[in-house]
Each structure stands twice: as structure tokens, then as C-alpha cells.
Image (cartoon, rainbow, N blue to C red; front, side, top):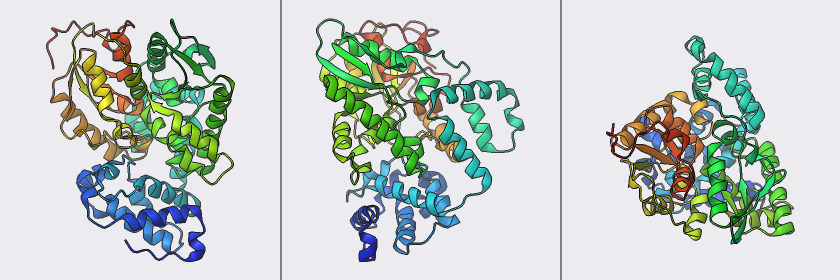
Length: 437
């Protein structure tokens, strides 16, 4: 694609990167075939190719974002299926992230939109605040239909029926390896996950210790910054990311780190991009080192080779989170681990398509998100599984709100298969002979 940025514009690192990405695009349209919003809405401007044209026009002309551009960029899930499909290697993620930052700086949203985004940015990344919000939403659930805004109704519906108790495992501390130490790893405990489902971190710690890992929960580490990053709030997202970089580098320098383990794939995609995010700052070297240490928990488990045996050979439908399969290109490891443990693993039709969670997307775009959820749940249920496994808390909450089939994290099943407790979500599930839905 031909671009027309001026020399002065190209001196801005963000514009220079956007120019590289735009020039890689050849207008082929392959991306439209795998774009969830294009499949739902059928509008060219709700495809990656259409959004690229809008972004190019906005940036080249150095103009404030307009309502039309904002509408179509806001509808993007950042699922990154287009990056998997693109034969030209267009790095759409960096382009749309830059566009969102430009929108945040130049476009004034309606007051209710600004208020909602402010609340999300000030609540979800902070586990204590988020937990209180979930408790409030739980109490408001009977009155949800009375709320005038679909986004507010979606926020109330998101609250789990039971808000889990605080887990002390999420506090800064060191968990020694069981037996001989093979590795020393830092566990990213996240933010939303600590309020929504504490079983995932607990299972991860048990499993890694059992496999010979000393597990460190670093002082000062917290939200990865993804939520605010995808809202275009660069200052807030970079502050969160910088805190993590400093916390993990302190651990790396003090006792060494073999890996930074992440069990929420949306966070993993962001942490692995820290090198790019901080490329022009004083933290560039440290950020690059942290990004290189970051890995999804299933990537580390593949290296550790757990000897697992499923207590019950359940039929498991594996949902590939977009941030894992498209953002991190981790596709085979989760399924291979589950199969090696003795589970029967099946996949839904169109496994590349998003479930509609996408961070805060299900709260900001509930209609599109709801349609994508219905489609994903239908394809999963069509495989008649006894349990659904995923590697991202957002996907788990989204899918779980649309089906009666238990939804668990992949690591919970591997933990169970290596001697850990049966996942809480499966406690009501009968033995493997149970009739499938």
C-alpha cells in the first residue's frame, strides 16, 4: 500500500511503525474471511482492510478522529485472526493500538461513554475494587432488566454467581519446589483473574511446584496493562507495564528467573510485546528481557513434560483463545498436554473465531459480543463435550455465561491429572460414563 507521510511525520516512532505496517498491506482481502465482526456485520469498514483504510486516512492527514472512524475501530475485537491469515505479514495489532491512542488523544466521546471507560479503567485492573464491584453487581442482578443501557446490563450479567474468597497465594511470596529444584519462575497472578477465579493461580502454583519449579509472586507486579492499552490510554497502560518490568527484573537480578509464567493469554500477548511498547524508552533493554522470558503456562509445561494421567477420561472441548492462538501463536501445546494426560480432546468448528469476550469488549459492545458468544457456544456444544477447557479467564467467563457445560482452565485439568484436586467446576460432574449433553 502506498503511503504519503511527510518526513516530519515519520520522525515520530509511532507514525514510522504505522508506515511500515501500512506499506506491507496489499489489499488482498484475505483478512475479511476470518474477521469475526465482518462475518457478523458484513460491512467492509468492520473488516481489517476497511479499518486499515480509515486509520491510514486519519494518520496521513494528521487529523483528529471522527465519529465514523471511532465507531469502526471500537468494533474491532483485537482478536488478531487477521494477522494469522494475512499472507503479507501485516502487523495489525501495532497499527490498531496506535490508532486507539490517537483516538483517545483527539476525540471527545459522549459523557456516558467517557464515564463508562473511566470506571472500567479504574476498577477492573485493581482486584480489591473489582471484587467489590462484582459483589455489587451480584446484588443488582435481579434488577438488571431495568437498567436503560445494554452495556450496564452486560456489566451486571458478567458478575459470577459466587465471588470467590481472596486467595493468599496471590500475595507476594516464594513457593519452594517440591523435591529438587529444576527452575525458578515468576508467576503473573494478574488482576481480573484474582477476583473472578482464584482456582487458576492455585492450580498453576501446585502444578509447577510438583514439577520442580520454585514459584515467585513478585512484590510490585500487577495488571499487565492490556485493558487500558486497548482503550488507547497509553499513560496508564505503560505505568502498569513498567511496574511489572521493574518488579520482575528485581527478582531476576536477585535470584535469577528461568521464565515468567502467564496463565491468562490476554496478558501474555501484552507482556510479550513489552519490548515494542518500551522500545524508545530507558526501559527498552529490561522490557526486551522480560518479553523474552514471558511464556504461556502451556509452553512451560511442554518443556517440563509432566507425567499426567486423567482420573476420568473426560471428553474435553478445547477453546483456543484468540490471544493464545493468534496473539502468541501457541496452538498445539494445550491440546497435546490434554491428550497426553488421557483426556479425549475435540475442537469446535471454526476454532479460529473469537468468542466475543476480548477484554472489555463484551461490556462495551454487548450486542456484537453476544452474537459471537452464541455462535461459539453452539459450535462447542455441537461436539457434545463433558467439559470445556480454555486458557484465558475472559473466554471462560464469556462461554460459561452461555452454556451449562462446565468450563475450566487447561491448567486445572493438568493439575488434576498430576495429583491435584478435581477442579471445583467439575465437582457436580459424574464419572466418565455420564451421558453427554
